[in-house]
Length: 425
Image (cartoon, rainbow, N blue to C red):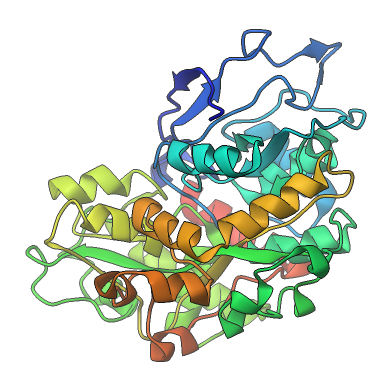
């Protein structure tokens, strides 16, 4: 069995109240760094950070997960913003030479909470390959690092659905060799040839979920069914509710409430959504993607906007909490596996994808790490009570009202301007 000596590093969640200025996009959570021959230091040569061949990280804590962060569909702008404001990042990143891979090591770049020690040890036992994982806090942070050359260290990256589109357009991904993948036909039908990647040419799904509301059933007189609940009960909920720290999720939810597309590029519709949020703003405690968790558990908050996987985990600690996908619709997200161009160990990358989507492995991950699998085989292996969990596996009727967050091109500037006004005024 291959294991590593571990050094725990805690990065406490940092969120901004709307009164303090524009909220920080992204999250900071706990992760573990394996000791390396050079004491875990990033090697810097004249402000250049070398891709982390000497900075392997095991992620086996189940901390907060922030997945959907969307600013601009402009590579240059994304790079500048992400490198200047992301939570955990490379300092002064510049292009770096390709990294030569070791056959017995697989470097992955992923979200917090998508692996644990048991999973990594099992893969090492099966293949003899030691997985080392680096954590990103937003899709934009990940893209900036990949574009700056840091991506050459990785053979697997886990971008969200809309980012697969963008990375494909930028020519950053390797087209998958389906002859090396044994798991495609075991996926649920909606994940075979998805709209963001027809034919699964560049990606396979890792996990999926919804965005909705978690609420305290004892503190609310009636259960919320739609986003408009927040407006109708804004006095009762004053300073006892939070919205996500994510422009596209928050604006998108409000657009859905108004009967529009979550991905609207109609200036009048987006303005209406902004005006509705201004009306609600005095009742919002904060825009946060993480800090709601302990506050919901202690009862300080009555309702919070959140991701389904996070809700499922928190509800396990308090049976008075409930989760609902608003009936007017919400976002449906998918996180994926991709292999970047120039990956140092593509052979190990295919082994990792097949392993992670193997039925028994994926099923065990669902039950341990609390996120939904796209594998039909794995779903059928789950305990009946897990399959019946509508937080993780919502009904077809619920899914029909959901949309994926899609790139909106230059119109992202419009969303961003309204978000800045909303969170800083």
